[in-house]
Amino acid sequence: MDTCLYIKKPKGITSFKLCQSLRPVFKTRAIGHTGTLDPLASGVMVVLIGKACKLNQFLVGHDKTYIATVKLGLRTTSEDIEGEIIEERECQMPDFEKIETCLNSFLGDSYQIPPLTSAIKVNGKKLYEYQRNNEEVELKPRPIHISKIRLLKVYEDTFKFEVTVSSGTYIRALARDVLAKLGLIGVISDLERVMLGKVRLEDCDDLEDVLKGVYQSHSPYEVLSQEYETIEVEDPKMILDGKHYFIDAKEEEILLSHEKKALAIYRRLKDREYKCVRGLF
Image (cartoon, rainbow, N blue to C red; front, side, top):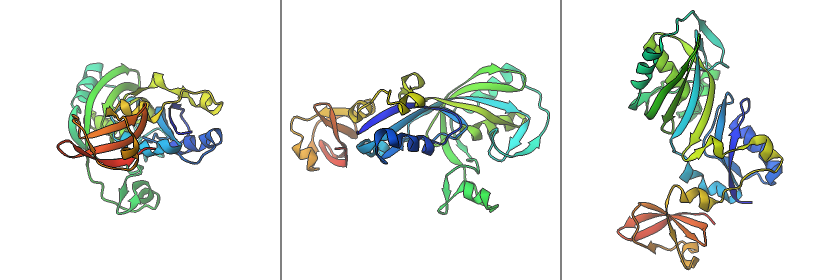
């Protein structure tokens, strides 16, 4: 089966383990996903099965929306509740307006230093490997963009906010920076991804149901046509042969399809001439 699934990842497992658990259901090792979630996190995952794994490069990089809960008074090695505690102190919860103002100050373009427990590679080695080996490494700020952020609830020692961020933004690091600006310490205690690109949490199937064979399948055409200008071709042969295609199209990259089956992603070479980036058949 060559298809895409929208799955609600439960807390407590890695994204890799979720994909592994699907292998017996779909009887293939060709299973991938378009965006990792930490074990602590739950929510939207787009999972690719079989030849649909070819879609991966065209579906990464989307904006993501999260609902995050921050607990005050702790600092850990991982910047979330599951890490080793390295500092504890009593913190007074600011009022709603002060937190809201602080969150709003992070809107737009900025730079972020990623968590040391992340899988970003520096000199060919993942950051968490440096931490595991107690090795020093220079952490360089990375550009991020926050398009929406709003405070939802404030409790005695936690607050909850919703945020829409560019790909590559770490919510743990965002919470760390917000707390530092407020003069506090704290960690992410809960994190839910409620949107990935155009896929919403309510569009997703529960993992338990998928493991029982109960799920909604989404074809590569259905998924890609939401993201790309789509051109229906009458004769697919020249596309299957990877030949250049001449068309008046608006976008630099387009999806070529035949009878609502995704054939290939093409990129503009010049004017009306497009060349194949990746065949999807």
